[in-house]
Image 1 (cartoon, rainbow, N blue to C red):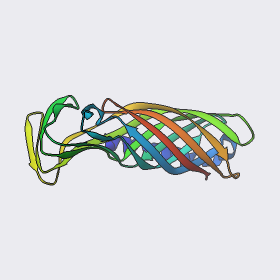
Image 2 (cartoon, rainbow, N blue to C red):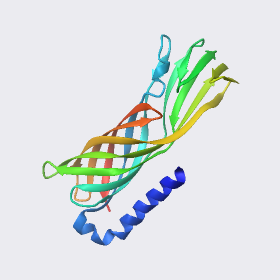
Image 3 (cartoon, one colour):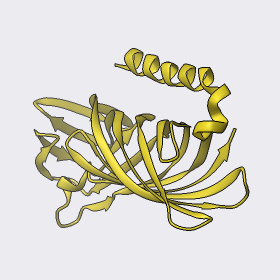
Image 4 (cartoon, rainbow, N blue to C red):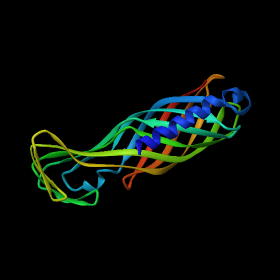
Length: 218
């Protein structure tokens, strides 16, 4: 999957470069850099009495876009690693990612999303001289790792992990659709500040991303 994704991103970069001569007519190329507050439901099914859930994290974001016309842009982006966690006191059992688990000893279980990638479109509508509103949609490519840190034993899907440090017990990757809305406020002729909200899904669990980024025309 990563080879296919890298090919798609490379194609977008090549398309951007090949159309640079038309940038004045169609709006040109831009890059973004910012930070996203990620709220992820990946460990919320562990929530019971005595379990502490931390379901949000911050991740850096980077992107590149090519404005096809006055309203429509093609975009590729990167969302950095983020993790959420559940702290358990011991003795708990139940289901996680569709498989049974039981725990002996206190533990912290983490769901970590490795660097994720986006490919999609942005449709923008001006509302004033400096303010634009837009919608976004596309595909999110994700990798997920489940890990446990404990001094005891976690039995997951019939396999026992007896550790006194940290061990990975789950790995998955895939792609899902995302959509969102945002606004852009012009700071200079070449730069603006963007605020986005994205609704995503990773491994069947909801992800909300609220980000602030600076956009530069290049």
